[in-house]
Length: 455
Image 1: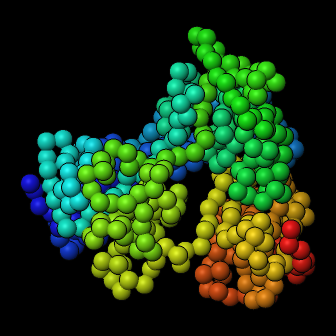
Image 2: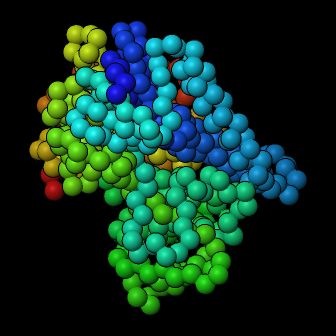
Image 3: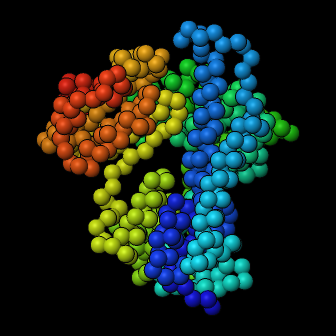
């Protein structure tokens, strides 16, 4: 049994920085069964945003006329080259991590799948190691419903390995992952159909956001099928047949992408050999400091169910680092929900939706401005979407906001910062902003707040 001061299972966006931080205080065992870097580097943020950039170039090549640019017809997406560019970016990130680990004599990298023997003992292949402090950072993966097990399907991992464009890509699931892949492959040249079980896309968003996103995608000739309560899929050779709600609708495609949700990668850890608590979905139970019920054992990143983003995983690292090495001031409950939907134009979201604020009993004021009333957006020729702010009528502070439109994923951070500072919306409203920009119209939006009644 090899002894370490710290053991980290998983090299994702919480595990790697934690390994380097803890290596300043003792010996660290870092375990990885697949590629270094976790989801973000290998099949999440890095590769998908590279694909989105290529998809945007394709869109630009087909929309020159409206901007007075005559672009000869014939632009074509070469998926082999798009993939090669993505692979180069991913490889560079992986190699950077590996080089840093190999040059740190306090970190020992174990390659293989880890499982617990007991609370503080872990096996990897033929090795057995132990430490008094263990950090579980195993991430999550795509959920595969059993009804799809007998047909060829793609996940967010597999689709990034294709070198030939799907003729017709059918996507099951109308949320963040499905929508991003749907738009990018449509722009590459595939026919795309998105099938959603609910009556609107990304149901956690407010209805006006869902409706606007659906309109954006449908304007690009992406077919969307709603209310698919019953989905039956069969395959004949390379042809995939999807029947929706019995015989109500039949769709034939060449490729099937499953994007119906994600599940934590805790099922291989053999947690039954420990006293670590976890819920029925496999998420490990943690407190405000990412601590499990067992002293010295933490769960960080997607597997604790407290966030499903790279930025929340990294914040878990910050919380744990400060708990162990600092003054224990950071905690999960202090962070404000913020994220993006990276279709084009993107959605930037922070804080509560209108529905959440109303449900929690807040008296709210709403400010909204459509992008076609924003000068810079019109000059760019990108007027889809809108910006919206949700204000607490009692405190004048932001409860939430969204920017669906050009630059929305970047613009939202200005409101995020104000929310962390717990300052009133009037600070933003009365400040002087650069002209001409999209964000300069947020103060204008905040000059005309309207009350909304509880539903």
